[in-house]
Image 1 (cartoon, protein in one colour):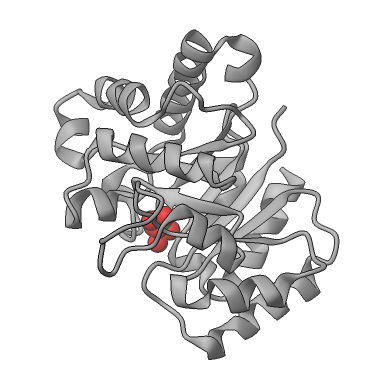
Image 2: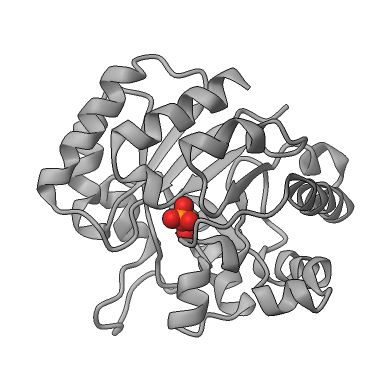
Length: 249
Ligand code: PGA
């Protein structure tokens, strides 16, 4: 079984004062049996990475530009993020796909850029409510997997997060059977494309309104290897019980 991963996405939240949440997490989880990743805004990556030095928790960013350098005002390259202390980067989050019109092809280029810089790419996929209600969920997922992941994706350099768009920040979560259906489908699609050895090794995270109250049930689903947690990762008091659930389920 892949080593499980609890990943936090602070989105556009947090200033230096919030880094004390990392201290609280490290104090509560001095020797975690799962991997811990926290993705603060880019402004905090270096300070967060310095703060967790010596602890197994690692720090990620939330986006990168596909090019290694150049005239791209306001953007950050994967190599810059690695230099700042990041070990991973979230790519293709639905908020970026929607707010910044990111396509599968662009996400794929970003995943390759992350891998070239030695970062783990945390590639996000997921259907909208309209797509789910139209019975298109698995087709959308298949397309996103086919087009957002490069041929060079491996379980070591890539993590996949299934995040139904309608479940993000809404308090809504799919039924357990719906999560299971997509994660089983994902496992099969990855095995078909990358071979069963690799396919079985990819970590498949669920994301979208994961909370202390629903974490254990979600982590009990086959082929769910962890979570990408937004709102509930902002405070150690909320994120810590989710980590406990992942360790104990
Ligand atoms: P949420 O966000 O946990 O606040 O729903 C998840 C995400 O967007 O990664």
